[in-house]
Image (tube, rainbow, N blue to C red; front, top):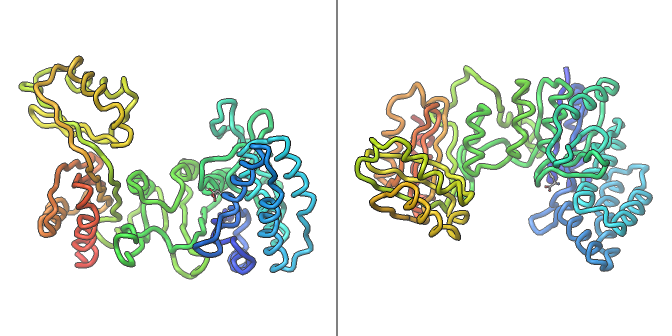
Length: 439
Ligand code: ASP
């Protein structure tokens, strides 16, 4: 049996946090492969090492003196090493980094050093083997993650070591240069390692006890989700819920490896289980609520639209021509509405409208802005009657006007459009009807 354990930056921000992590790892011998992030913030005003590295490299890139900034980064690691009483010096590593910065090794190289160095410290602390991610995680010439090559090399490597630390966030290009994933990418590394190891579980340790049913900035102390499917999670992450990097789901999902989100500061909490499918009912009809503000709706009217074959294609062509992706397209007999991100649409608005007129000859086009979309997601909705009814009566009671409704054919989500200013009220109303009244 093996478990891959990934620790986020806040779990590794100081020697005290490292000690908690050490205890967690030693408490279970199956926790064999460890993926660390770079040290994160020690307090709300602190700066993440990754951000310090980006800033330091920007100076190097502009041929300015960066020695003070690099020393500050070194001090973050030295503080951890000292606190853990390790026999380790990163002096030579920092000399190499300084030389590489002077050679302008690139901003990805710079940022990756955060996890690289933390990996060295972690390996020393645990007595595990250190595997430089650049030797086992690969990108292709286009800079896309190369899953096949990575899987072949990484799984072979892991077979030969019982316990190892593999730093998160980066890998290498075919020419050997370091490349990082997008921000928060250590989650992705953890998932890739779990797949290559054929792990039984991918534990993702952070500073919250799992996913919340709704955004804690809107709902005061929302309940957390015990079990969520990959599909539900994807719907919620797409709509703005964040704890895990979006791309972290794919590698483990292919292998049916569950992810367990856990809290380093409260390891006894069960956290959230993310699974392929489950017969476990969620506690409530809904699993989660998420949403985003800042959408626009373009409402297109044309008499007899329903009989005109190809009308929808022509309308969407006008968006494609301007490289704008659409979110939802609810339609009626003689109307069709296209929802898009306001910031993407704004500058190209008149070109799109002209395009629709030219391609589809509508009778009328109306644009409405500042719309929020809210996704109410839950595998339980399929077998529960009246879910939509409850959502809408809750919204009506809170005086929220619903502008759009879209129920996905999977019957696992209902998307509701409201005006931006009603966004928080709407989420509170939905949370309250399903969770607080405990139906
Ligand atoms: N350290 C990187 C970041 O801050 C990657 C990670 O933490 O996952 O984005």
